[in-house]
Image 1 (cartoon, each protein chain N blue to C red):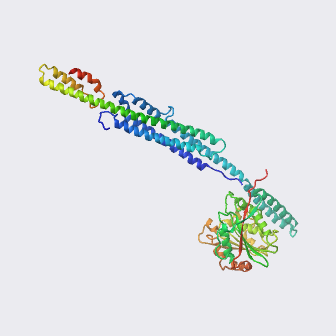
Image 2: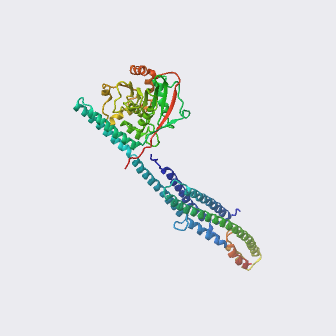
Length: 147
Length: 408
């Protein structure tokens, strides 16, 4: 979903992060496997084989844990992207509704001779946040109250 | 024989692999930090989505050293493992070096024996000078010295063992094998085959009386790592006139039919063995000739009745080894002694001594052996009964030793 919002976060930035984290998880997972293979290699003398294998398997297990964490983070980022898309959809509807309300105020300014409508319109205009900004929720009740 | 086991190379490769893995993991740290920051996870709070914060915190924790299971910590563990593997490899190499040095002690002792032999020889010369025609002290010295050296070599090299090798497994010979002197040296060149260490060729070239040519290869294993006798410890022992190689070949000659005549042909260490075999040993056969190429001349004297041609390339460093061994008598003087030996020294292009000049082909030995030089021609005439263009029966005999340990 390509939505232009004036922030770093966006569905596409989260999607990129998901892909990057999933790739990193794969990479670390592969390394975990390689460490396991190294742990299983012989060529040692005396008790060194067991000691090395134990230490290497511990490191391999840590890599595996890290891979799983990265993978879980990637999945969570994916879910966050979904939540953001839903939120932006709601914000888009709210933005449309509030802009309609501001247009309504503008129409009233033409018919109003008291100047109250003009003042309300000016206030509402200054309150308008950027496109799909999270502040639409905060200003919604105020703008609705100006009608 | 002690096998040198150094698995340092494989351990080093393993350490390199661990280092690479650590570098791969470490490279992820700045990347993940940048991804987390540039994705704006923290800005999700503005939209009322709080799940971004734990993810960002987890990603930062993964990148921060000192936190449980962080990427830098795992990378450090892998680097430490790599360092441990390298250290183990080095200690293995050191242990192997110590073991190798201990296994080579017999070689050092053989060197000492060589020095002792030369001192003995000098004492022998002195005794001769002092006692005039009285030969008893010399005989006593010879007997005592030879007995001591033979016993010492059995300690150093262990018992010699001769086994028959299937001719089908040997490199094929080209042309009639006993057609001329160069053909015989060519056999030595052929059997100096790394796949068949210390394998001599015995040619049955005629009957009435039975006539044989024994072709003796030179040093093939400069370390003593294989089980063949033509190795460095064997070469040093051969310099003293007592080695498993000499004993093995002596045993072979003892199995030949009574009255057999034998022409000995040897290169390098094989030449030293040939000279030692011709040195009046009791083998039940008659040594009818000796042809050596690139062999250090021993402190023994072949009976004058035995035709003996020693070929030497002036640039071949091996015949000069007698100087290193404090050789008792220079060959020019030996020529004047009552011996059948003729040293034919020649030069091939190039002024410096090189290892290539020791090769039978590259050193020009084959060419000289096939030439009409007067010395070669004369020797050819003396051993003519052993040269034939007919097919001959060839047996291959491998001499091995156990590189035994000294009794301690």
